[in-house]
Length: 363
Ligand SMILES: C[S@@+](CC[C@H](N)C(=O)[O-])C[C@H]1O[C@@H](n2cnc3c(N)ncnc32)[C@H](O)[C@@H]1O
Image (cartoon, rainbow, N blue to C red; front, side):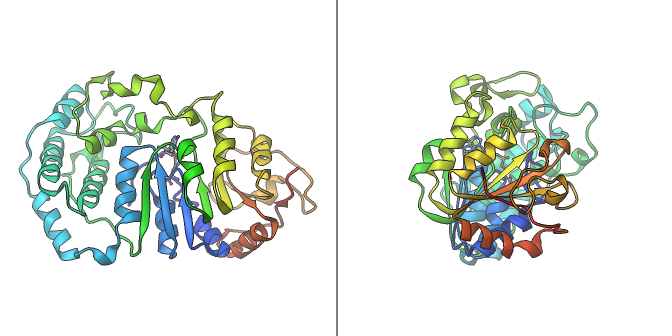
């Protein structure tokens, strides 16, 4: 799946997978699962994964990639169903009106097909175990022919090159094994989740609202023909401030993260962090230190840079600030000291260009 998603951890997936492997994770949690890319990797490595997110579309991806066991799916029947849906004649409906004429996210020839296919999924497959698989196939197909630069807050002035292509359904790459999907607020769910060996946390760290950035996927999943507003024809519910994630509120976000970090029942926690965050790096490390020992891995767009930016020297003394480089992403690993050390050491081969020690006892 190569879906476009803000903050997707595509590049870091092998490292996070290696950390989970080195920690010996048999039960894992992906608490802000988004596209489920990380959850998929953890599942591929044999862990039972619980995937959590607030977004409706993310729940569909998780029911497809995390919860569905590929061994229980008849691939031939799935291909035949997708071929039937793909062959449906387009028929103008909500998507065509709203996202092809009132706004210009899809060309009408594709919008009409999205309308027809989505109606058929609802009518003929609503109670089928394949429902999330078919819907995922449609979301991914729509994503390949949209006319955006990635997020759905705006469309490009001239039709994008890919929007001229006909929408095509493909079978998602399902993974063998069991898993669990939960849709809900991490702050409420975290204290009630089962105990896991390994938890990965990738919350939004700033104002980027995922339900607004991906409102078209929300609408295709909910299929509720909502009233809309603005040039991008967003769902009216997005105006309701009570629906906003605490992670998109500058004053509320640090407290929410602190509570979630304290509540998760996990042997090792790996937290993603980047230099566009509202939380200062030191504060984040201090929060993580509540769970024990902390180690930090830093990556720029090409390689591991932890030692170069010198977050900490081998004695754990602070020797530099991470804010100096742009587009640096961090993985903060925390938990009981021996487990964290074993996890980071064991994952070393997956860390591109390992440079020196970056271990640090949090102050
Ligand atoms: C940075 S993205 C995660 C990206 C993901 N790791 C990936 O690779 O696709 C953050 C995710 O947090 C979700 N989210 C925002 N607020 C949330 C909350 N309060 N509880 C659970 N999930 C939330 C968003 O829907 C979004 O998918």
